[in-house]
Length: 321
Image: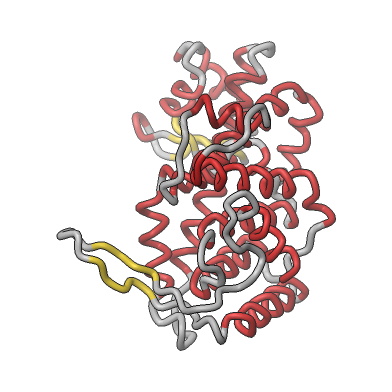
């Protein structure tokens, strides 16, 4: 079964668990996507803003409220939204709507991406597309995306390429990073991968932002002359998506299936692992299940021909047949 099929099956069986995960993911997505850019507020204020119990106070909370609204729009209306200029400009208008800053239009002056070295000195890290060339570059990027999509290019490869191009163009004076994460969520939705509804993609990126920026920097080299290597950024995105699905499965097994037998829960962990899994990893996911139960269940699954063992002794791992 595919990632999409497994998630769909579980949603049908455990709607309450998924509703709980959905509520948590929204808060974590707003918190972490803004935190990456240094935009923060207290957890108590964030939760109140998410419930719309309070009005935003200060610039950071205005940015947070805008992201909340854009995120909600994607979660609720992604089926009707297209990956086009209209959508991109509208999402940007929304994230800027509380700040008083101009949103919903491309930059009107050039914007260099500035880095800071270990001595605190600022330097030009990357020169994005000029303001004059940005509208044409965005048009070409969107057309290239549509052509690749129509030609059957795997969306898991296409999406990170689109995001890298978007970040390299850097079409707005402010909000490009947050926009890239909103577009990532939207495009995953359009491709049928809805894990971002239940597990925060933004939280995963924030927790691995060193690797994120390393991959982005490496894949941006020679971008302007078209000889850059997209592979590092693609690999980062694939790993991020995989880790989100793994997080979803772990939440499901540990929270959603406690009503099932321990044997069934062990079987679920092994069957739903996308890579070979060790006995120790199974026990870390299911801390209330004894080693004896795990070993007995693995033995039975091997005898039944449902899984196979790779390696021996302490290095043994198990995968679906």
